[in-house]
Image 1 (spheres, rainbow, N blue to C red):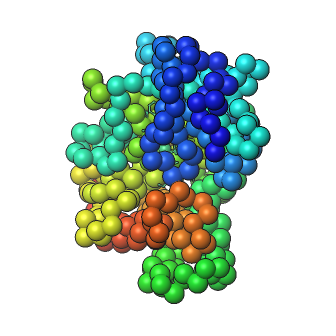
Image 2 (cartoon, rainbow, N blue to C red):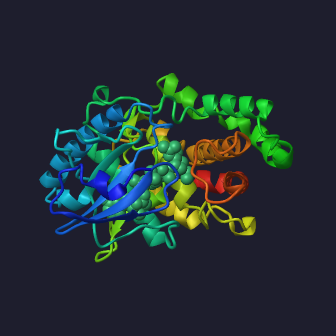
Length: 355
Ligand code: ADP
Ligand code: GN1
Ligand code: MG
């Protein structure tokens, strides 16, 4: 990695760069806090192993954030805090290549908190509503303008095929050690086609969605404790609203976060789930169809399943995708999510009753 301060200086920022330090614990990109004489910025090194065409990622993000800004202004909100504002290089580019890596910079939003779990039903409602409002603001965005930044990102059926190929190849001899997890994942593979089939047959409408609605991708305003800004916009693409709903439940309606290694702690909290259903519907508005709403509970299982097989596949494949902070990290995350899935299966009838 290059000299971070020198890289930050490649962007046109307000004031001289004083410092550039690591920030956050994301699974994909590397994030830094840049402090100048007058302002703070976030700088990210993009993971180009995952985002193979970073210029397409930025093209999407610039269009989406300018659309969001128009909506936020029309609603009387603060566009500098309620969505991201990107900096340019002296050549007017949103990306800087140092010959090896690709970077972008955007304004840091101060006085915010991020959550790893909902903590209470009131916050669960706010999480869901914030993601719902994000989607509502993009309802009239022309989906044709967006690139598919990661092809088949939530194509669970293809994710399962890839998983099976990795298990078969077993390049590091790790499959035997996680045999029980693999067996459970294979038993649950009936989930893999359910949403993709409904999307492909047109039963589910295509919408512009976030696709990475993990709870820590919302900044909460410290003063008001309200959801302020949805971040991590790399995967905004045309898809089904259920990917956003399901992934939000996976990460926010669980009783603990995906990093918890004590599986006894892991279950789905039905009070949080109820708050998620209400918050999301309140946020998105009245455009959701019955075909979508009736699959809320199913999508919670599918997205939990998908993320679990991605973590487990990555463990067996030698940890090539997700950032890990300890050996076996992806295996632990997979065990957590498969436990969560088993709890969703156990409480599924109750989930279906919540509308
Ligand atoms: P990743 O793709 O690695 O998850 P994110 O874009 O989600 O990266 O950023 C990682 C973390 O950095 C966030 O969870 C948040 O804590 C912090 N962060 C990112 N952007 C901002 C911002 N504009 N203002 C304040 N904090 C931010
Ligand atoms: C990654 O970037 P982050 O940490 O918000 C991943 C998501 C997973 C999540 C699991 C582009 O999200 O799909 O659900 O990890 N993002 C990408 O923690 O693959
Ligand atoms: Mg993130």
